[in-house]
Image 1: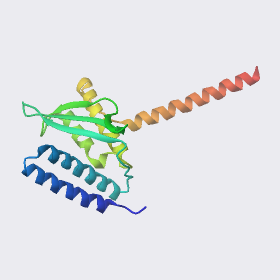
Image 2: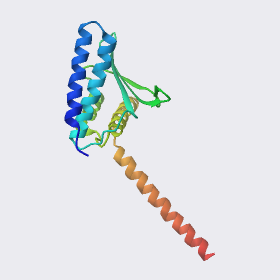
Image 3: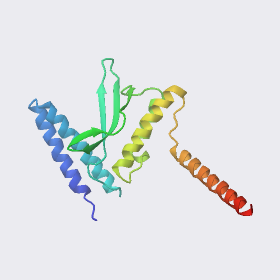
Length: 179
């Protein structure tokens, strides 16, 4: 199937224009909605342009940046899906307070991990899962003092354990046959 990245990008530009016009008229709710749509479509364009798979709206991320009174920002991420004619949250909302610029070494590592180049880009679901993993890693790092989002090590360990289970099952089967 040919890439539709240019179509997605053009639509993102139109949505952004709509957001600006709506904001200029004081229609802030529609401006926010159109801006969110523009960001989502631009992200789809980028992913598809780089060979990623773009699926419909079945598993979107609800990503919000909210300013706080002390000048920090709260980043919230949740997965949402369409169910029975309504948008519903699919899982918990994960939130973390951040310093807008700079921050400690944990926040700096977190920001680096959020970059698209450091995230899976096969499809939007994988990207959102990567962001969620980074957010959870930052929350864990604030408790442990060490930022590490090495999921590949976890997967490798799971494979290693699965192979060990298979080996033990073969030994058990062999022992049963000898009895």
